[in-house]
Image 1: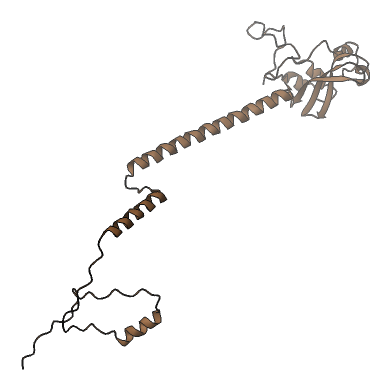
Image 2 (image 1 turned 30 degrees about the vertical axis):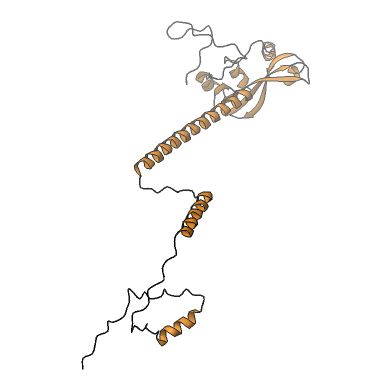
Length: 253
């Protein structure tokens, strides 16, 4: 990455670059890196603030700038704690890769109000997003995926409904289940019983023909009938009209 030009310095085209936003505003969309400075000086806890002061994130009205003009190290906490106003504090250091710088407002030696946080990662300076913005972005992303999931589910349900309707229209041979009404069933039984009472009783069967002897059950059939018991239903009687046995012929001597 190339270094971000500082305000007031012309670029290669001879035109002045646009002014960066004032410090303290949302500048999470930009970063700063000066490769020439990184090649000249080591990036450690003693010189990192001088490197940070070159970036557009630095507010020159802070108390650290006053200490620099008085030839005092800008991060000297013994002097900063005696002043009030804006100041920068080196909060966390992992040399030479990560440096976390916090911007805060000091009202007294014991009372400070954090404002913004910046970090230097491998020579590039960034502004850390605020916690509310992080939550807003994460919640917005989660809601987007939830809404997308509901849209996909609803589209699949609509397709399933259309397929089931088309299957029902094509399949005309599928029997439909009918519900049984007990009142109608009792009504039909009552009508059949009343009709049976009105009809005349069936006539008695005709007598056996003369000389016809009904067949006697064999011993095997009698044994099976005794084993089955009297509870088993008996076979229907033989109809003399249908089964009259072998026809008798006259014998001629």
